Length: 639
Image (cartoon, rainbow, N blue to C red; front, top):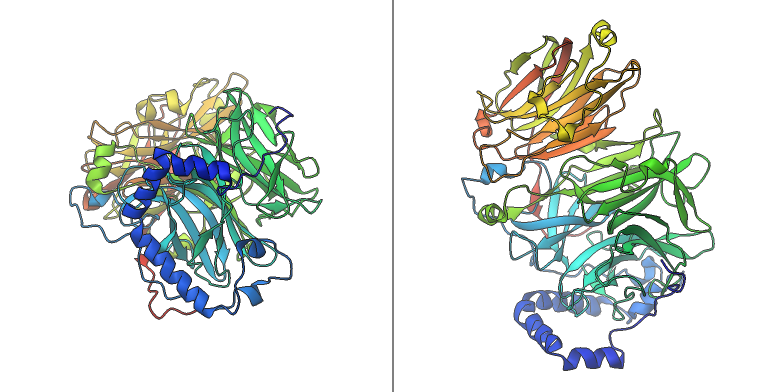
């Protein structure tokens, strides 16, 4: 970024030149008409809520006053009015069942009852509730009309849907209320910074705030009257400027946020902005970090991890036992990349520990279908939690037939792997285990000789939590001199490609004849010097008879330390399988759509397709119940 782009002038939308441009243009007139035609129900909801608020306030407070912070307007004095009575509008209604595709809906992953969902936004814990905002199209199962859905939970597994938090109803976000992040200010005020897609599709940064931060449900949100607060700075494309992060306070008392961008067409980067009042921001002369040939960075995230313990950390938790993760979602390849490094909070610079594994060229959160992720610090359980969305791999016409598209992953706790120091550990939050059946199926010390396939009779196998370990005959492993040195999951033949030391693992979502199946497996490649490298893969190539479905072999390498057994955990939920290898060092999420291996026809197998080793497998299998996903009963609600 050129040093001349040190600041971005704050242009308010009611300045004369801006007002004239919008009022006098056909676009401006069209937007006004669009708002009247399509957003009357939302307007009625907002007006009713605001009337209730005004009636209960003892004094009027401007948005600027609310956002100034400090002790003058504490949450105890400013936001102590009762909750407004809000009708249950703007909530996804129940979708009529489509028998042909209803089985594809997940049972315990988060998704609305209908329509399109994507990026998680502003996840946070507030007054006993976990809040999740997300991009949502209330009108269709394909992208468009992006609105912020809003749901709350006590455990991040069972959810209540609330009225929409924000809708595209201003010139600066009329084409979509896009990705953003939550920040809780020292006075208790909850604010959101988000990207608005303006009428000309330019990306503008905007501010919204909770009208009543003492409301546990955070039902009402108001957009700052001075929006947008940031325009793309000189040298940045008008579509290359998005996704503000959570704010944190630096050592100089000023607040920071990072945003994704790119410059010179190919250099992905993270910009750093500073502020003291949350409405005027100054751009640092230097970027936080940049990596050539990585393209546009979306959904940038910067957060600390401990090198000594497994508790999550806040941005203020700096010290000698802390590393910082920098993550970006690659707009061009649609992968979420991260790297481990150090952060200089004085100069707002981040440096990778291993430049060969820099952001965008090294490690990924998930080597399958997973994107646009965001973490938040859960102060309730002192952990950092990762959310992302899992897209569809069927064509849009199928999504329209289903009436819905995309789901979110099971939230994951995320920490540094203190044993290796070179990767993160991701693991499903412990609350998901509440859905496990009281009884489980267990198979111990199952001998898997080369070419073995062992069916596991457990009944219905579409909603499962599986924990499996594999032991290898060490003498056979040591006697192998060289095997598949150049192996790679994504370029391999999948599970049918037989090597001396792999593949071996679990087959899920298979019919009895395995005409449809999803093998999830380990593959060991051994070099000429005696060292070996283990891979964790998922083979979708035969997952469905439907030829219109996208099918890939996913996966990557996974560290296996001396003395460790090979282990995996699989969360199986109809059309999604989340796989965690070696305690979560490598993660692969698959999206599959079998036509035969559904409901009671779905089967489970253990297999060893290696030619040169025997494997001993032990496996536990829990049936999983359904998560609650219901509208919140607002009538009669009180905290």
